Amino acid sequence: MKTEETRDLRQALGSFPTGVTVVTAKDKDGSPVGFTANSFTSVSLEPQLILICIDKESFNIESFSKGGSFAVSVLSESQQHISTTFASPETDRFKNISWKSKTTGSPIISDSVAWFDCDTDNIIEGGDHLILIGKVREFGYNPQTPLVYLRGNYVNLGLEQKMLLAMENKNTKIIVGALIEWRKKIFLLTDQTTGMLYFPNASRLGSTSDEESLLGSLQKQKIHINEHYLFSVFENNDDKTSLIYYRTKVEDGSSITTGKFYEFDSIPFELLADDASRIMLKRYIAERDLNAFGVFVGKESEGNVEAISKTNQNV
Image 1 (cartoon, rainbow, N blue to C red):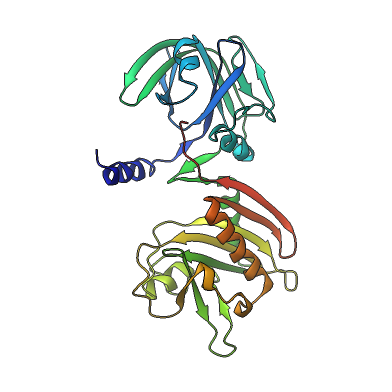
Image 2 (image 1 turned 135 degrees about the vertical axis):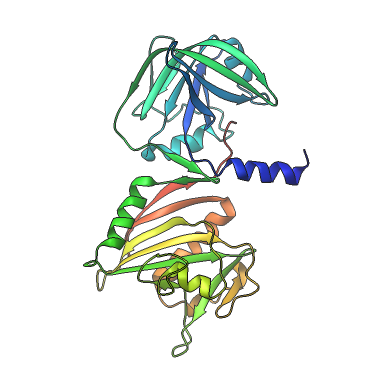
């Protein structure tokens, strides 16, 4: 398959949202090993079977293909950093991770949404991956919200739901804005009275058919948004307005009717309307370079960035 076709297939497959797991085992010396995977599914309830897939090029391959057992931990929304760790080239992935073991001795990530401790029941060749079928020996679960992966990004379901409820509350003053990228350029509008630059925004996210909403006004300006991800949620210190900003990319920004796309290295930050916008845009550019985005949650002057890294799975 050609490189372009492989990329397109990966993007198509990425349209199916999945949970995020860490698959673990012990190597021949008894040391814990593991990797991040979203290729996990139930196979059978009777007998109790699950499966995971592992890349044949993984440096863990021998431990999982010959070890005889493995465990799967389903991560929660608060464990995004664990997913990142186990998808990285980190040598000691368990250094700062809390874990325990059950029947088979395979590591189980503490506070995961669910876990399955398995004997390896069968191994099947599957192209460039091995399919490991596990017979469940022991399992557990809790009511936490799971971490979700979609189109190369983690999705914070709990935070998204809170934002949607806030936008639906007529008593809450809301501004919804967007950081829109095209070919490493950021879209900004110009205030015709002051000459200051600002991000497109509206009182609601809405839909493309609602011209008063953010998505509708962008559609009117010939900016077609296919997908968007939460980027920053904060409260204005002065009037307590709740500001919700999304990040998105567009395939074509050449036909816009108003505003301008600015190259990253030529953005006139001094013309941005406020400090919050300057800080937010600088953070976006820095995280874009790392290809690792987070969600800022807090007040205008302080808060936390919750890590949401974009990484390759099954490594």
